[in-house]
Amino acid sequence: MMDTDTSNIYSEIYDLAEKNNTLVNVIIELLTKCNWKCKHCYIPSHDNEGISKEVLFDMFTQLRQLPCFDLTLTGGEIFYRKDIMDIIRKAREMNFNLTLLTNVSLLDEEKIKELAHLYINQISCTIFSLDENIHDSITEIPGSLKKALNNIMLIKKYGIPLEIKTIVMKQNYNSFKDVEIFCSENGFQFKVDAEIFSKNNGDSAPHQLKMSENQLQEVLVDIDKMRGFSIHKHSANEPICPIIKSSISINSNGDVYPCNKYFYKIGNIYDNSINHIWNDNSLLNKIKNLQWKDLLKCFECENNEYCSRCPGVALLEDGNLLGKSSLACEFANVRYKLYSSNS
Image (cartoon, rainbow, N blue to C red; front, side, top):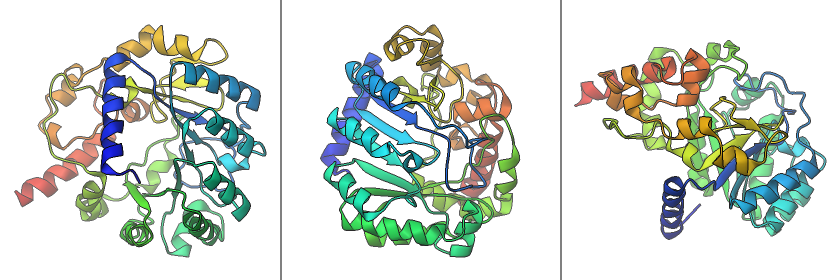
């Protein structure tokens, strides 16, 4: 976990990056294959073995020349790759501030010990519940919680910073507070999210997992506190997504997106250099500069101050980058009922 001074420096760097159109943060999907079968997963098929190691290393060189320094590796399950430790070593040799998104179940003490020696910035994993029946019913892999928790404690033993996320849905909506307590007791970061959205091919099957309105009303205030949500009126000139001013996401086919929730293809690494995609892309530049005043229905909405709209999710769920987001509206309506009744 960052100390206050480091966090402030990071904020200043990202503020400058946004102002100067500097790419500093990239998420790379190494593959889609995974040993868990999580019911809510947005990846429609888990059969892609990903970008070759040689192409990845060339991408790393391109990124450092830009000069990107924050790199996140995700999947699928990244430790499903036999060459994953070579990839991690190369990223650290090139001085990337490296974050690994993994379910941690395929790790062992030898790998964890080496990751500690490589000074990984953070490992981020997901625990759905400390109740084995609930957690394993979501991953659809018996014993997945026990294996994950065993490796989590090894990660703690070797002093690697760890973040645990809980995705809240109808099956586990009573579980996230126990996971937060577990994180607090062990010095782990905790993150919670309640947004369940369609697969990236438009398949809406994950919607069946969403909490009912009554369940959402029961837990949303606590989730908002944990996520740092604050009620505020969105201003006309506020960017609809400040993150994409300094970051991109690259999937296992080499397709480039503004972020890993924003499935609006802006290029492909096999067709153009990353420098060209970032600096000479009229489509990306247009997206970066979109502001709340461009979202006519959302900007004028009476629940504007309760909204945490994601443009990528709006595009995925409702087919319109600038239109209303059904998922954001659902949350904003519940917040209005909860917060206005308490004011």
